[in-house]
Image (cartoon, rainbow over all chains, first blue to last red; front, side, top):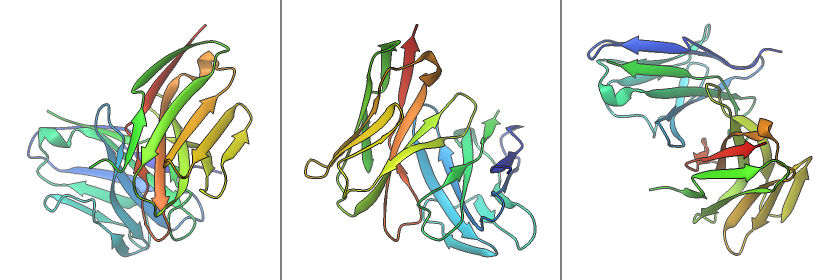
Length: 114
Length: 112
Protein backbone atom coordinates (compact mmCIF):
# COMPACT_ATOMS: atom_id res chain seq x y z
CA UNK A 1 0.00 0.00 0.00
CA UNK A 2 1.91 3.00 -1.27
CA UNK A 3 1.97 6.05 0.94
CA UNK A 4 1.78 9.66 -0.09
CA UNK A 5 4.15 10.28 -2.97
CA UNK A 6 5.79 13.55 -3.82
CA UNK A 7 8.05 14.54 -6.62
CA UNK A 8 10.52 15.80 -7.23
CA UNK A 9 12.23 15.20 -3.91
CA UNK A 10 14.67 18.02 -4.56
CA UNK A 11 14.20 20.99 -6.82
CA UNK A 12 16.63 23.78 -7.60
CA UNK A 13 15.38 26.92 -9.26
CA UNK A 14 16.87 30.33 -10.02
CA UNK A 15 15.07 33.46 -8.92
CA UNK A 16 12.22 34.26 -11.27
CA UNK A 17 11.65 30.70 -12.47
CA UNK A 18 8.59 28.59 -11.79
CA UNK A 19 8.46 25.63 -9.43
CA UNK A 20 5.94 22.81 -9.76
CA UNK A 21 5.56 20.35 -6.93
CA UNK A 22 3.48 17.20 -7.29
CA UNK A 23 1.66 15.11 -4.76
CA UNK A 24 -0.15 11.81 -5.19
CA UNK A 25 -2.28 11.00 -2.14
CA UNK A 26 -2.59 7.59 -0.59
CA UNK A 27 -4.89 5.21 -2.40
CA UNK A 28 -8.46 5.92 -1.45
CA UNK A 29 -7.72 9.41 -0.11
CA UNK A 30 -9.40 12.32 -1.79
CA UNK A 31 -8.27 15.10 0.56
CA UNK A 32 -4.91 16.78 0.15
CA UNK A 33 -3.13 19.34 2.32
CA UNK A 34 0.02 21.29 1.58
CA UNK A 35 2.34 22.52 4.30
CA UNK A 36 5.59 24.47 4.20
CA UNK A 37 8.47 23.93 6.58
CA UNK A 38 11.13 26.57 6.89
CA UNK A 39 14.50 25.57 8.38
CA UNK A 40 14.31 24.94 12.13
CA UNK A 41 10.58 25.62 12.15
CA UNK A 42 7.38 23.61 12.33
CA UNK A 43 5.06 22.97 9.46
CA UNK A 44 2.73 25.76 8.41
CA UNK A 45 -0.53 25.01 6.67
CA UNK A 46 -0.94 26.40 3.16
CA UNK A 47 -3.95 24.92 1.42
CA UNK A 48 -6.52 22.14 1.60
CA UNK A 49 -8.02 20.62 -1.54
CA UNK A 50 -10.46 17.96 -2.54
CA UNK A 51 -10.77 16.67 -6.06
CA UNK A 52 -11.30 19.67 -8.35
CA UNK A 53 -11.95 22.02 -5.43
CA UNK A 54 -9.92 24.33 -3.24
CA UNK A 55 -11.56 24.13 0.17
CA UNK A 56 -9.30 26.30 2.30
CA UNK A 57 -6.40 28.41 1.06
CA UNK A 58 -6.09 30.59 4.12
CA UNK A 59 -2.40 29.77 4.50
CA UNK A 60 -1.39 30.49 0.93
CA UNK A 61 0.57 33.64 0.12
CA UNK A 62 -1.66 35.97 -1.87
CA UNK A 63 0.63 36.17 -4.85
CA UNK A 64 2.69 33.75 -6.93
CA UNK A 65 1.34 30.60 -5.23
CA UNK A 66 -1.44 28.41 -6.56
CA UNK A 67 -2.65 24.86 -6.06
CA UNK A 68 -4.88 22.44 -7.86
CA UNK A 69 -6.11 18.89 -7.48
CA UNK A 70 -7.61 17.82 -10.81
CA UNK A 71 -10.03 14.99 -11.32
CA UNK A 72 -7.25 12.90 -12.76
CA UNK A 73 -3.63 13.07 -11.71
CA UNK A 74 -1.70 14.44 -8.78
CA UNK A 75 -2.19 17.61 -6.83
CA UNK A 76 0.11 20.41 -7.97
CA UNK A 77 1.55 23.27 -5.94
CA UNK A 78 2.82 25.93 -8.27
CA UNK A 79 5.11 28.79 -7.33
CA UNK A 80 5.66 31.42 -9.95
CA UNK A 81 8.64 33.77 -10.08
CA UNK A 82 10.35 32.12 -7.14
CA UNK A 83 12.38 34.17 -4.69
CA UNK A 84 15.04 33.05 -2.21
CA UNK A 85 12.53 33.21 0.62
CA UNK A 86 10.57 30.39 -1.04
CA UNK A 87 13.39 27.97 -0.22
CA UNK A 88 11.83 25.44 2.11
CA UNK A 89 10.56 21.91 2.38
CA UNK A 90 7.04 21.51 1.05
CA UNK A 91 5.03 18.63 2.42
CA UNK A 92 1.85 17.15 1.13
CA UNK A 93 -0.50 15.18 3.36
CA UNK A 94 -3.64 13.24 2.58
CA UNK A 95 -6.58 12.00 4.56
CA UNK A 96 -9.45 9.68 3.76
CA UNK A 97 -12.19 11.94 4.98
CA UNK A 98 -13.17 15.48 5.70
CA UNK A 99 -11.73 17.35 8.63
CA UNK A 100 -8.14 16.30 8.26
CA UNK A 101 -7.81 14.69 11.65
CA UNK A 102 -5.54 11.85 10.58
CA UNK A 103 -3.15 13.18 7.99
CA UNK A 104 -0.48 11.07 6.37
CA UNK A 105 2.54 12.97 5.10
CA UNK A 106 4.68 12.46 2.06
CA UNK A 107 8.49 12.70 2.08
CA UNK A 108 8.44 16.31 0.96
CA UNK A 109 10.00 18.36 -1.81
CA UNK A 110 12.99 20.43 -0.83
CA UNK A 111 13.05 23.58 -2.90
CA UNK A 112 16.22 25.60 -3.16
CA UNK A 113 16.11 28.96 -4.89
CA UNK A 114 19.47 30.27 -6.02
CA UNK B 1 1.39 33.89 16.23
CA UNK B 2 2.31 30.40 17.33
CA UNK B 3 -0.83 28.48 18.27
CA UNK B 4 1.12 25.62 19.82
CA UNK B 5 4.31 26.29 21.78
CA UNK B 6 6.82 23.49 22.11
CA UNK B 7 9.87 23.02 24.31
CA UNK B 8 12.69 22.28 24.52
CA UNK B 9 14.11 23.08 21.10
CA UNK B 10 16.66 20.31 21.47
CA UNK B 11 17.17 17.47 23.91
CA UNK B 12 20.00 15.04 24.56
CA UNK B 13 19.23 11.89 26.50
CA UNK B 14 21.28 8.86 27.43
CA UNK B 15 20.21 5.50 26.09
CA UNK B 16 17.68 3.99 28.46
CA UNK B 17 16.62 7.36 29.84
CA UNK B 18 13.28 9.14 29.61
CA UNK B 19 12.77 11.84 26.99
CA UNK B 20 10.14 14.46 27.80
CA UNK B 21 8.86 17.04 25.35
CA UNK B 22 6.28 19.62 26.34
CA UNK B 23 3.65 21.57 24.46
CA UNK B 24 1.20 24.27 25.47
CA UNK B 25 -1.75 25.81 23.71
CA UNK B 26 -4.22 28.63 24.23
CA UNK B 27 -7.15 27.74 22.02
CA UNK B 28 -9.63 25.73 24.10
CA UNK B 29 -11.40 24.67 20.92
CA UNK B 30 -8.58 22.28 20.11
CA UNK B 31 -9.84 18.71 20.44
CA UNK B 32 -7.18 16.54 18.87
CA UNK B 33 -3.50 16.46 19.75
CA UNK B 34 -1.15 14.30 17.69
CA UNK B 35 2.59 13.87 17.91
CA UNK B 36 4.67 13.41 14.79
CA UNK B 37 8.16 11.97 14.41
CA UNK B 38 10.37 13.18 11.59
CA UNK B 39 13.69 11.70 10.53
CA UNK B 40 16.10 13.79 8.43
CA UNK B 41 15.00 13.94 4.82
CA UNK B 42 11.66 12.32 5.54
CA UNK B 43 8.12 13.52 6.08
CA UNK B 44 6.50 13.62 9.52
CA UNK B 45 4.97 10.32 10.60
CA UNK B 46 2.10 10.11 13.06
CA UNK B 47 3.37 8.63 16.31
CA UNK B 48 0.53 8.86 18.79
CA UNK B 49 -2.48 11.11 19.38
CA UNK B 50 -4.85 12.00 22.20
CA UNK B 51 -8.23 13.63 22.74
CA UNK B 52 -8.81 16.06 25.64
CA UNK B 53 -11.24 13.73 27.42
CA UNK B 54 -8.35 11.41 28.25
CA UNK B 55 -5.49 12.33 30.58
CA UNK B 56 -3.01 9.77 29.34
CA UNK B 57 -2.46 7.49 26.40
CA UNK B 58 0.27 4.92 26.08
CA UNK B 59 1.53 3.04 23.05
CA UNK B 60 4.59 0.95 23.69
CA UNK B 61 7.37 3.18 24.95
CA UNK B 62 5.51 6.36 24.00
CA UNK B 63 3.07 8.08 26.34
CA UNK B 64 1.10 11.30 25.97
CA UNK B 65 0.12 13.08 29.17
CA UNK B 66 -2.64 15.65 28.85
CA UNK B 67 -3.54 18.39 31.33
CA UNK B 68 -6.69 20.07 30.13
CA UNK B 69 -6.89 22.69 32.88
CA UNK B 70 -3.30 23.78 32.26
CA UNK B 71 -3.71 23.49 28.49
CA UNK B 72 -0.55 21.45 28.27
CA UNK B 73 0.40 18.08 26.89
CA UNK B 74 3.63 16.20 26.77
CA UNK B 75 5.30 13.24 25.11
CA UNK B 76 7.29 10.81 27.21
CA UNK B 77 9.61 8.32 25.56
CA UNK B 78 10.58 5.60 28.00
CA UNK B 79 13.79 3.60 27.64
CA UNK B 80 14.97 5.97 24.91
CA UNK B 81 17.01 4.36 22.15
CA UNK B 82 19.45 5.81 19.59
CA UNK B 83 16.90 4.93 16.91
CA UNK B 84 14.51 7.41 18.54
CA UNK B 85 16.84 10.25 17.53
CA UNK B 86 14.63 12.45 15.37
CA UNK B 87 12.68 15.68 15.44
CA UNK B 88 9.35 15.49 17.25
CA UNK B 89 6.46 17.82 16.57
CA UNK B 90 3.35 18.27 18.62
CA UNK B 91 0.25 19.50 16.83
CA UNK B 92 -3.34 20.42 17.51
CA UNK B 93 -6.57 20.72 15.64
CA UNK B 94 -10.12 21.75 16.40
CA UNK B 95 -13.29 20.19 15.08
CA UNK B 96 -14.17 21.76 11.78
CA UNK B 97 -10.66 22.98 11.07
CA UNK B 98 -9.03 21.69 7.94
CA UNK B 99 -5.47 21.81 9.11
CA UNK B 100 -3.14 20.96 11.94
CA UNK B 101 -1.25 23.59 13.91
CA UNK B 102 2.28 22.43 14.59
CA UNK B 103 4.76 23.26 17.30
CA UNK B 104 8.26 24.31 16.29
CA UNK B 105 9.78 20.89 16.91
CA UNK B 106 12.22 19.27 19.32
CA UNK B 107 15.38 17.67 18.03
CA UNK B 108 16.02 14.61 20.18
CA UNK B 109 19.41 12.95 20.28
CA UNK B 110 19.79 9.71 22.20
CA UNK B 111 23.41 8.90 22.90
CA UNK B 112 24.54 5.31 23.40
